Amino acid sequence: MTAKDASKDEQVGFHKGALSTLAKERQEMLKILTIVEQLMQMHVKGLQELGVDLTKEIKEAKESTEKKKPIEDML
Picture 1 (cartoon, one colour):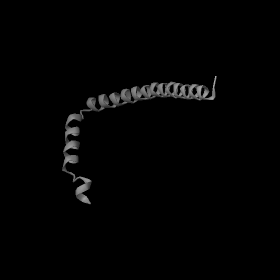
Picture 2 (spheres, one colour):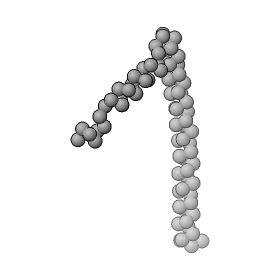
Picture 3 (cartoon, one colour):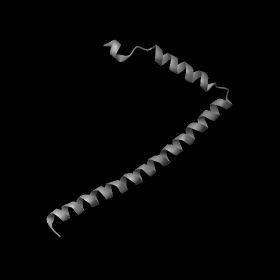
Picture 4 (tube, one colour):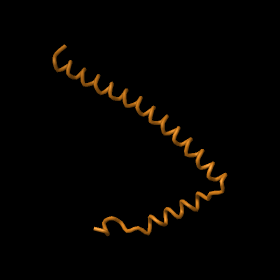
């Protein structure tokens, strides 16, 4: 095996290792995201049980952000 072949094999191994590591990282990120979603749903349910109208609050939040000037206009 020549030095060029060894270099190519090293690069292939490097990229395969990186993809393997990133795939595992993605799996862990999905686990975290799932947990966060579950916690958010629990809080939403709790607020709804307390009579908080979340759709109304979302609408108000959107309206307040629409009223703000874009940063370009402020400069």
